[in-house]
Amino acid sequence: MQIAPFPASPIVVPRRTFTITEERIDHLKQRVAQLIRPTHESSAEAARPPSSFVAVAALAWVSYVQSKHPSAISADQDVYLYFFFDIRGRRGIVPPVSESYFGTCVTGCLAKGKAGDLLAEDGIATAAAAVQGEVRRALENPLANWDWIALAASTLSLDAALVSISGSTRFPAYEAANFGWGPLGRTELVTMNSAGQVVLVAAKGGGGGVQASVCMNADHMEAFDSHFTSSSLD
Image (cartoon, rainbow, N blue to C red):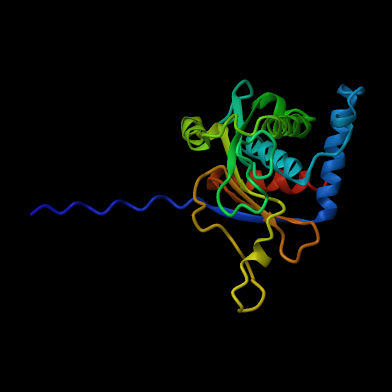
């Protein structure tokens, strides 16, 4: 009789959770808008602050590249940020899917940039523009990347060059998961265990804040923490 060995447990990637207040997010959004404006004077859209999701996603992306440079990411390397986009209630879907549809109805978005551009002084604005570009594309053609599973699979080879974001800055995780036992003390995605993975939910207590849980290799976590925290205060 042969007994197959039990698969070895994967290495647990360190996780750290950050809470960004509404005040700091607003400050970050204004900073991004100010950095974008000088190069797009004629664009009213560029002058407007980005959404909370775009701002926080851009900050996480830049902080990730900063923490990995130069040991794992070179300045001339392409870097990517993958995220999901809810397409319920969007135009261009036949038959239409209502806002009340209960189920998965998302598409995949893959923002791309040059590491050196994200490492620059205005790197967060560059990252925000790339994320916003993917949001705009998904709004214009919700079904362009409808096969998001295949798109996600194609990113596996990107390894250190990829940040994957799931969740939403507006998802009320603390209010939605009410089991009658009183207010939740902490909520996290238990399946989160890949370096470069970021999960966003609305912060505990509401008020417009955002909770960002981040998985990073131990060698890079402190650098990520330093940049992510200081940049949201600048």
